[in-house]
Length: 238
Ligand code: ADE
Image (tube, rainbow, N blue to C red; front, top):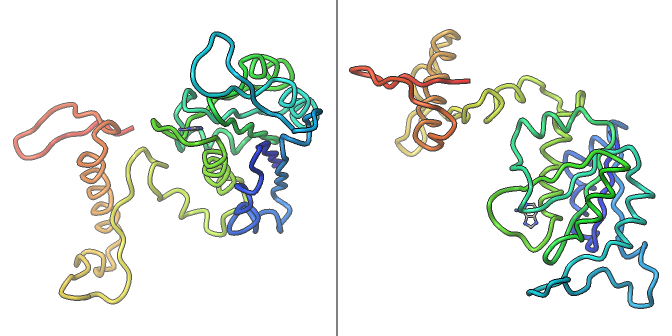
């Protein structure tokens, strides 16, 4: 997989050189290149923003540098604009993006990027507008970092232990069950007996139950109650 990231703050993306994406780079599974949008400006001040037509607060990113940058690095790619007005980012979106050969992240700043850039990008590649969540960041860089990390760990061969991917939160539509390690007793808190039993079927059933209860308590939006029995709540689980 090839990932290009275009930003006016390329230093923000420096952590991609470290940690898991760094290892994937070393294995040759992933090539990440970070670009400075200002390299595609033509004026002495390397201007990337201007006042909005129609008035209003803030600045809008100019189309010319973005057009030149995307023409150079994004032809034929899946072009991800990180924006609070995009589609919410989820594990399902991460999994889908992990199947694409070439992702380009366009990190907006200020009040956003001139709409004509997004319209133009749709003529040279496939546009995705993605939001990290319902809050406003100073720019799209942190979103591009988070999306990149969630996506690249799903690239086949990237994670050492593929099983840990299947069991983690959100992969099966549920939050992950609580986990424990040694010692069996710590500061008066004991590991649940079932986990010490060696009975794999009971352990699997306990974990499933814990995941269901935790999801219902913390994220009721992920599990729709279908009927309430006398002693249990039945949940429709995807
Ligand atoms: N840029 C600013 N806020 C953002 C968000 N919530 N998601 C993606 N990009 C953003």
